[in-house]
Length: 419
Image (cartoon, rainbow, N blue to C red):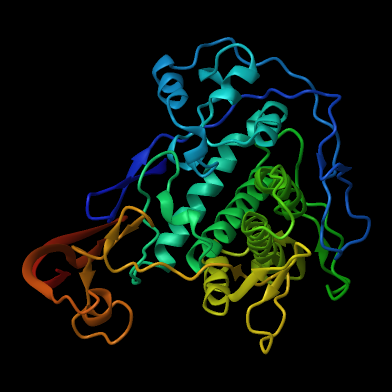
């Protein structure tokens, strides 16, 4: 079971269970993917950061002949393409293969938020689309966790643009959102490869680490982070690379900002993948170990990207079409760093122009002096106090064998919301 995202009127997020879904196989055999006019290639040496697409070409397959629900297609068709994003795949889960109509192309053309290049990828690798949506959902949830105590809490506002007009501003918050969603796609695709859900990839083929003890086996089935990185780079960056703005324009600066932050998110997942091992031996003697490459917990990826958000670099576009630091006294950002080109809007009040939802009705912590405190969260407007009843499990006891029985305890607590 996965979680569907909903937003209440006050901007607070509600999570609900929804059925897990997956897409149909539908690929073409003789089409080569390119970025910027150059074909992608697989890296030749272990430890070299993967910059190109690789792997065998997909085999052509016949999709399932069953029909996709007409209501789903008609609702997607009415969404304005210019206001939507591929993030909408998290809000409109791609259905299982048996739910698709005959032919892959009509389905891909109806998915909201895809650019022409992304639709081409959908047609070639349709079975990947469910996991792209899963990665986007993972990124959204992590964004909401990291910003849960801030004025802007990464709330979703609709199923098309997902975050609304606030993403049109090249702010720190936009930078983090692009990075964490790109990271989510790498995470989801890499894991799907390991689990055998995709026909074009399998277990990781990473070389044995040089510092691994000789008597330990390098094998198992590791997360294929190399494939996940390359596919995420091709898919997520396609939208930006298709744009053609005047050199030195603000629009080009925003494209370069998005590409930088996408890369930072992908690299966070790639760099944090580490070796995991399992012991073998009689009575747990661990006389032999089998090791493989394993993704880090996504919460750790989110924590690292949040640190990058706090130290993000303010940039501006030059006449030569390059990003440069606004303040040259700071260090030049690396490919792992986040960058932004616009100051953050005022998130205190609701503003339809900027897309800010404001903080009215948000819960705050009366005793905290941080961003979650009522003074900062409410922007000096004050707060209201109310009492609520919380029900929790308590006095839990283990019974042989084998269950735990708990009582329900109620408690009246004080809560505070911004005016």
